[in-house]
Length: 357
Image (cartoon, rainbow, N blue to C red; front, top):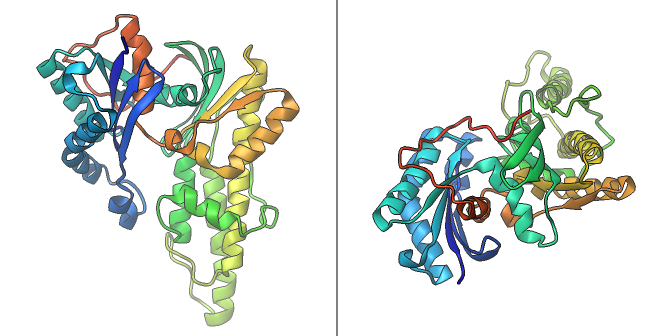
C-alpha cells in the first residue's frame, strides 16, 4: 500500500504544499509565490510574508490534496519545515501542520529546509544515492554539505556574509533592475560580455570551503559609482549618484557587461569551491540545489568543469530548485520510516542547523 506524505513549506516567501507517494513520486506540488507582493521593496518584508502565509496556507494545502486526489484520512504522515528561515513565516506552516496532525491523528515530522533542498535532486534522479556532496545556493543560504546517509550530514563550508542569491538580489536592486534579482541579472548578462568588467573572486584558503560575496557586491557598487560620477561630472560638474538607486548615466550596454561580469564572478567561486569539495570526498557526486541552481550559466559551467574533473553533477529541475513542499515531503519520508515523530510542542527555529562541521 502506498505511503502518502503531505509536505508543508513556508520558510520564506513561498506558501507550498505537496503530496508524495512513497517518498519519490510527486502526486501534487502547489506553490503560491509572493514575488509581486515584495517587488516594490526590492526584497522580502518579513511581516508581509507571514501575513500572506496565513491567508494562503489552507487554500494551498487544499489544492494540493485535490490535485493529488487524496483526502486527509488517506494521509500517512505530514512533514513540515521547522527551520531555518523567517521565524514568522516558519510558524505559520509548522503550526498549521501541527494542528492538522493533532485534529486528524496523523504522524508529524519536522524537516530542516536545507535538508529538503538536498532531497530535491533525489526526486529528479532515481539513480542518485548517498553519499554525495551537496551545494545549496539560494537567497538565504550558500552551504556545502557531505551527505553520508539519510539524516547524516557534515557541513563542509558556508558563506561568511552574503548568500549567493542575496548578492544577486542586492546588486539587481542597486542597478534598479527589479526583484527577484537572480533571473533579471541572468537576463541582462546574456546581452553582456563577462570579460568586459573583471570583478574580484573571493577564493577560500586551502582546506576551507567557505564562501564570501559581500566584497564582490561592494566592488560592483564602487565600480558603478565611479562610472556614474565620471559621466555626471562631465555633464554637470558636481552631481554624484545616490547610494542605492538606478544610475541613469550608465549606458544599457555597460549595465549588461556589469551583470555578466558579476554573474561570472559568482559562478567561478561556486564552481571552484564545490568541485574541490566533491573531488576530495569519497563520492565524486555533486548535487546543486536551491534557487541559484536555476542559473543557466552556473549549470553550464559546472557541467563543463565537472566533466573535466571526473565528477558527476546532478541538478533538480527548476521548479524543484526554488522553495517547494515536495522536497520537504521527500526529506520527511525516511524519517517517518525510521519511526521519528515530533511532539506538538515543537517550535520553529530561524537558525536551525543541519549537520556538524
